[in-house]
Image (cartoon, rainbow, N blue to C red):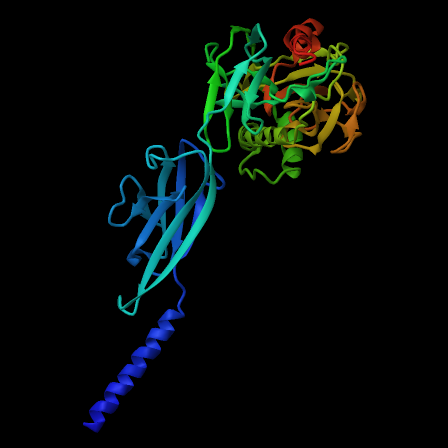
Length: 459
């Protein structure tokens, strides 16, 4: 009997010790990934729960608390429309939605997401529980957006400008053309010719009908608040076709021997194998696309203010046009078609070493070698509008430097994929290449931009 009592005591002590040790083990880790801050009429909810052998976790509950009421969103027993998926052996993700469909009494104001998860240990004799909460702000009122400017005419491959009103002040807004968004900016940053704009709701935006868009591509103004609530407004517009040229570009060994090694020496983005023709095809395709992505990335660095001045951009009139915008090129080598690309700029012939000037006032964002463009300069003119100068033999400016209209940026050259000394020039709208010819036309700038800004002066 004494031995039996002793054994029972030992087992009780061991069980108590195991219980204590189990209690010191880590409970599940809970992360509420989304929403970050705001909840709208239908906001995605994502939760990540981490624990060893995650598939065995229970219970798991998710609820939304507001104004003293608790609304269940999810439980293992009643998942509803929520989805639960395992990510490896130690992680599960729950995706659902918070909105009027899942929380019928949802109201604007403060709210809280509460998550509880349990992890069974000691062969299910004990459960380690953790909970997490996340405060959010509920916004159910949709933004408001309306178009102010009139007569929007846009050429295929070209640019337009719009004035509109969007509220409240913290909404993202702009123009969407097809699937491409062009962000808007506060109109007060577009002061020109003494025009004063004071209405904080007024916005302006450049937008484009890209060369590869259909003429009937839908366009609209959009507004989107931090909670994901959206609004849209249609606007009057007319599109005009523009014929794009086609050309055949002959390649020879001399050209390939000159440009291919030089470009590959200055980049690590592609490492093609094979002869110079095979390498050229990778440069002309893959590297061209990577260069375009880098160029587009500078749109995020644009100034929220209109930086350029005057009624026209420098037109480079002393240069002969070698190639026009959106020229569809077929490359020929030894009598065979080897590649096709679209040339999104103007090639302007010049004497070797001709000074290349800034088309207008702005700030240099990039001034170094860039793949197929050789020595390249990108100047920001504000509100998503930028200009690009390529194939330079030398660069005289640095990134971050302010420049005035017709200030020298560098000298013309034949770096990159240049067959001879020339300037490759183009304009960019939110990182998308557009026809620069319009910006050389004082009448176009007056009608498309300045007229609309004067119309809202004093508002």
